[in-house]
Length: 107
Length: 124
Image (cartoon, rainbow over all chains, first blue to last red; front, side, top):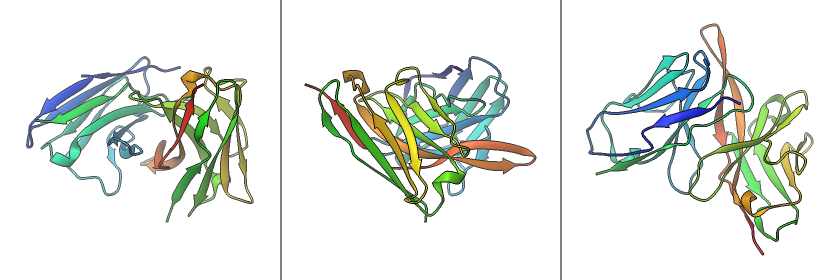
């Protein structure tokens, strides 16, 4: 199975800050990388697929980048509603594995 | 409108069985890859099982031989039969659609719709 590792595991930032989360795959996965946002008690919500394509309805402050084995999710200006946990997921092969998550707290 | 609604969760003793259901609307289950994903309390996401368009299935090692994924095309519903349940199976179970999208000339897959989840608690 492809292992996905996110860093940091958690972060605390202020409204308006630029935030970047990194995801590393245990092998090269081209751009078969998705990002999700989950709020407590809710299902995850798709933000980005194909490493950099914004899902319809997702604000443009979210940007995805990278290819091969290293990927990033950047929030250009953190908003109060962005708190929660962010997960990367590889869709290169089965099983679809997730990173362990990055918890984002608003200061 | 696409919707996924899980049901069937509850409290069950170790060794017991449960069947989860995921009723779909707004699309056809049999023309999509459909997943069960679970999340233990305070933990991350784990893909438990998938059923492909051709009916082939896959199971995580943690549930292989104990869980069975299936679908009823006439009811447009996905199922997860869970036997020999263990305490470590305690989790919220989500069903999700693995959508195929095309960007440029590349096919991508991503979980675009999820249910709200159903809680399974295995405890004596």
